[in-house]
Image 1 (tube, helix red, strand yellow):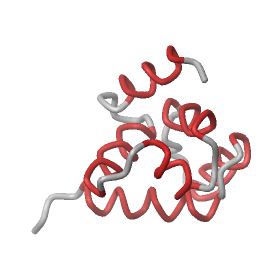
Image 2: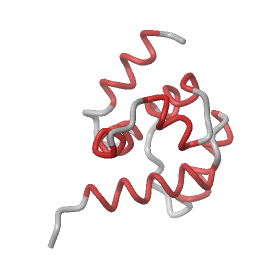
Image 3: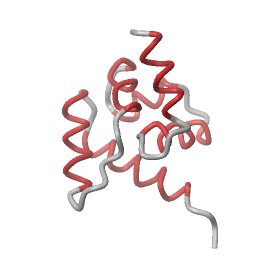
Length: 95
């Protein structure tokens, strides 16, 4: 696995619009390391790094676009969609 890719993934956590900005804070809140997050998404740690640097789809076909990203990098599409939805829910400020 490329150390450079993981460094980029960590940097992407501070960049809105990247999947890392959604997934990494959620994983940390849950106490998950990268291996646990990858297992939860049904992918390898190498694939996880690629997913983290990917842009968060913004189209009206969000679920289809996320599923395509999952398939591209070997993750389980339904798991990625579910975890992203949970992570988004936890990002919202409490009312």
